Image (cartoon, rainbow, N blue to C red; front, top):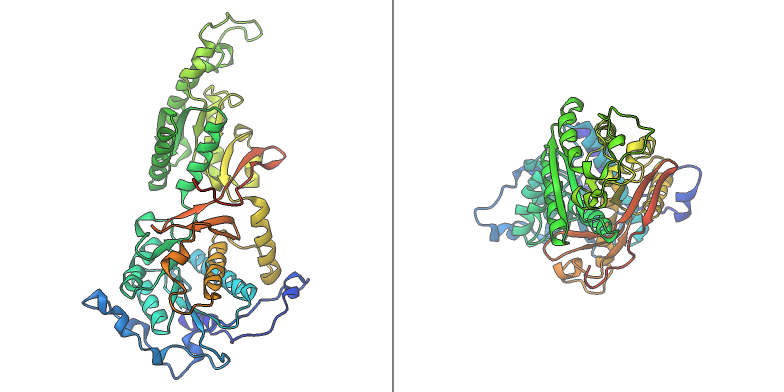
Length: 452
């Protein structure tokens, strides 16, 4: 496996490739000044020999400028950028994602067109020990900024090294506990999706909510963020139910939640009603008042097959989905869900499809296949690094204040900015599920307002 990784990492130095080739009928893999230590056989370095120093303040003393990578094809001092990814992880899916993210990073180098930009890929092996070793190896090669790793435990381990060496890191994990003190998280944290869809729902005069969430760490995180957003904006969570992620285990929680919408469901529309449905029922004087007593919307942060099993339970247990709005998460951006009647009209927040489609086409034109969702993170982090490297100043070009530009950046997934505390803000669109497809009902912002 390691020999295969060596082949993967040992790319040739810069090749001249026309930008027009990206749009040709034959996919062309762009190449840029991407190197690894295998390009320099005289640099026989064992990555695992580097251990955390007794004092973190001595970490930077390990790295000798005389040993920094000096590609023979570069006349000027290069801008060295480390890229940490799980190329040889035990999990095959992780290896595929790492490969695609590496391709996306190369595409960004190619698009930046900076001949002094040097991308140094390192293999984290998909674990914490490998991530710390890869970070030290990249720093020993002269990396001025580290991009990656991908997994939260790897970010924590690599952060010990980069913080001790006073080197900034733009990681791809959404674990907020790792953010700050020189570590920025360029990712898709669910809290941003929840904030956006809650804000939009309440702007449509929905103030009373139900929650039907999985009994998982993700479910805890999403429901907690939703409760905070609803409370902050003056809304009320009428009732919350949690369930084990099994179709049979969903039945009772869904039934219990549905009871809290009964005030807004006409009696003859309830499935336990045994009367004549064709006959008009007595006017319920409290019907309108009931609408303020039941929930007007339900957050359902599920996806895939489980979502298609869960969603129909609400109308089955008498939740009128024509009057109750279903709210979801970005994983709902799946064309298959348009065939589920119970989700019709559901809202969720996600990157603007018009923006992401441009990157997807660009990537497919270069590599002949669609990118996985996380590929855009590597592209944006690399392009951001190239932008900062293009400044006239050499010293502190990757200063933390420069990375955390309050105006933000426009990347493959639209508007984003990295905050001084290491978190990320994103401009997300509100999408709606309809039988004819997923529609944009509120576009993503194109700039950050001062109070965003």
